[in-house]
Image (cartoon, rainbow, N blue to C red; front, top):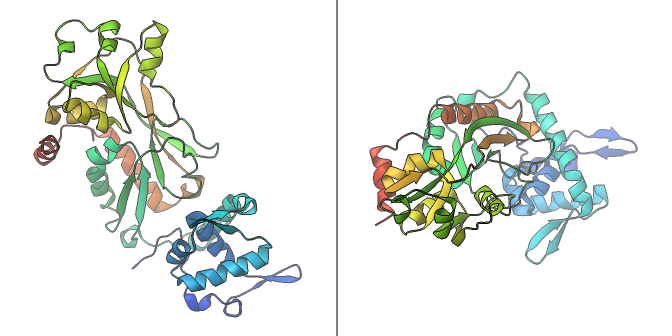
Length: 342
């Protein structure tokens, strides 16, 4: 089995200082394996998680943490209830250590990397819920043409967690991103418009949709990452009108499901709406105010810039999004969406 390329496998029997090559550093000897262990500890925030990443036992990792503490003269991780939290020194070391480990990995593998077909790896992608539902399978199929052992794990967006890429907790961030670090790399996938969606036969559709009639309906709102209000609310407020959100959900897909099960009005990205509206018995309408389009991008940390497997992930995300991944659903997918309403 091929291990994740971003990690070094260090057999447990090599955790003692006498079994490693040691490099003089001033008047002391420096064990370079401690950098890899420190990176694992700071990334996972737990001894057991770092032990699993390093392929060590928990006692061996605890011993390694003790050596790191002694070498740095700092506790690094301290207990807070049932959790371990990093010290200020540990937070300051997190990115430099991660960068050093990544550079060492690239140095050792340059020109001698494992073929993509032999890599077994799981990528964690943070994206709007609809992305995983609508074209997660298509993305996985595209990736497995080159990396047959790859696995994808989609995680939902959070309101203010802008450090996930930097800390290595996710591999790729997809969406209309607002808050990201200055070093984060991005590429544009597509632009999307926001549309209104209601259940077929909704009274709102019987006559012209004015801002006032639109706002008078009961609405389902969506929690926006990094934003307090949705764009539609800001524009309505400029003409002295306010919506009536009676339900707030964490995703556009959740808003679509709510609209399909009630008389609520949802405002969601057009690609997702056109993909699932037929299956859910929904009708799409143009909003009565001109909401600017959103740029959907994919974002990654510079440490993954030249990694072949990660580059393949980014290329596949770009390809799938541009080839109409938000096209009509298959019969099986249509049946699955309809089943959610029964």
